[in-house]
Image (tube, rainbow, N blue to C red; front, top):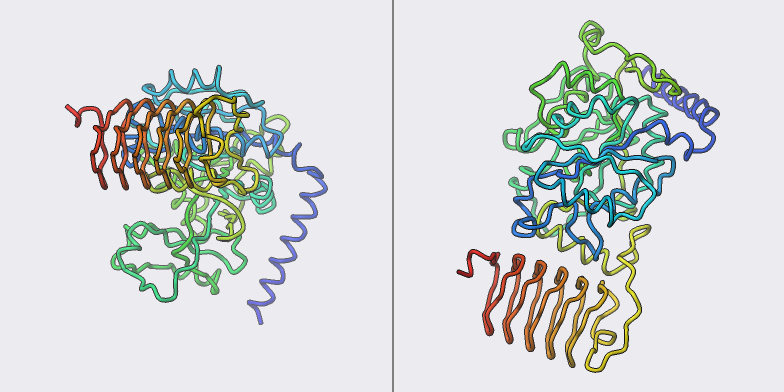
Length: 456
């Protein structure tokens, strides 16, 4: 029928665009130079990671003994073609990020740190750096860790001539015996895709839906009668935007968030009438050396996506204590493609140091770690220069640098910040210990966050 014929024509157009693209860009690594890169280092205010971010900014939190931001930089390095990245940072974190850029980062990208006002949202940040953006750009949240090949996302963006291409990750399948609870939708997105999972057709936050009910326009259903709405896709906060979308932020100065305002706006605009489409910003002046067809808005406007199957790649956001702990455990265990924990230096022989025999293979261990006799450390990340006593049992934990753990301590699912000290015989479970905090001997803590002030 007419619908099948229309799909055949669309498929033919896609194939033609792909052949044209491959003739124009025979090797992806050179085509990457079309894109600029932006990392929003202060992707969230860190409240959900308290007390970890009390002394250390989100981008520098250690994940398997590597700074979190190093994983976003590595993602860009693997793509090839990128030579510079704009790192957007708030004033109170600028000095620490500058020190990392000057001394800690050993990669090949040039880091251009740009300070934005405190409290600025992601859309505000893009307005602030608009003078630095001259072509299509990738926007990466500062809490993302992913081994997804960026080249594949970029190919999807180019071939479709998209206004935006967003990365989504499928959640693991739900246990059939587990009942679905309505409150789970509060933090979910309703994501509408085409049957090929390439076009982003609908986007609504569960918090904005009354009782999980959504409204879909007739124009959308007419254009895509086989629309599929998903609630188990996680937005990775990795986007490629056409350069002209910056003009929308100028037209909509009240937009604060890319995720909650700019992206849904673009998705909705795909199905407006031609009269309404004419209100979209005009194509910008072509940038020298950049194909103007890749910079101008297309008609009709297209929003696209790249969906990673739940078992096909690693993609997570470190935006809470549980996700921070899990990311450390995942990467300490190893085996995640392209995402290796920090290199562990060879042990220096020292009497009384049993570190080499105390760690299981699913751990990350920093330089200069000392461990006493008969201690066991499993599924944990232990930072540089930690000292762990005898008869200690540690599992599913993260210890930052220079932590001291005395004899006979038991810890499970605990995060201990730098320079903290855990007294002899203490027992900690599901807890967080702030920077330089001392836990008294014999203490029993469960489900608590301990900071310096609470010890007074």
